[in-house]
View 1 (cartoon, rainbow, N blue to C red):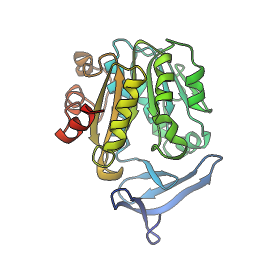
View 2: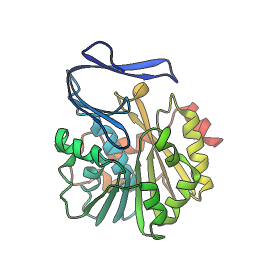
View 3: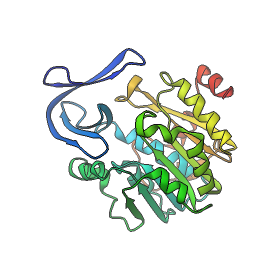
Length: 283
């Protein structure tokens, strides 16, 4: 939704609120076979990607989301070597995963090649690791890919998905989680973006229940700020054998640079407000 000629506004009808970003110009407007993708130059948040009217990322704050989606899961697994990213077409999460030297192979499966092509054009810094020989980019149905994956063939699955509406809704079901659980090794870890703890507690509660029903023994919610997403507060949900613990010393001594993620941030993100903890306790 546009407000005048120089604002982009995303409405969050479930909360009767909206986010607005002042824009200088529209850089791209494309209807792919799957969705409507727009790129804007904003006044203070750099470039902005919008898909089907929803903010996907901006230059200014995408690092928070991408770092929390990647590093929390990889430091939770004892020795991650084989990683799959479902979605993630902007390639920011892929870049963060490839900072881990012990990772041997990362396959990113996004159904819409247009998202990656536009990211390469307008967000080249997010795509700088696409040429890494450990990276494999596939453009197909990620759900079908997971269902066809060999059992015990992955260490970490990162579900970098859109909201659980329309095509993205099937990524938030126990059927999908069962396929992920089968594809993961015994110590495998799954992480999925899980919306706003403030606005979408119902979604969080259902996710945790469905993950347990699919065979994941423990789940945990990580919360973090995300200024350009509804409410400005976002979360990622971890599932695996013991996801409330992580390789804290390795995280503290990591040899690569991050702008948001640290071992202390990871530990703190596991601490939940009472209302979220109470909701998940009954999941």
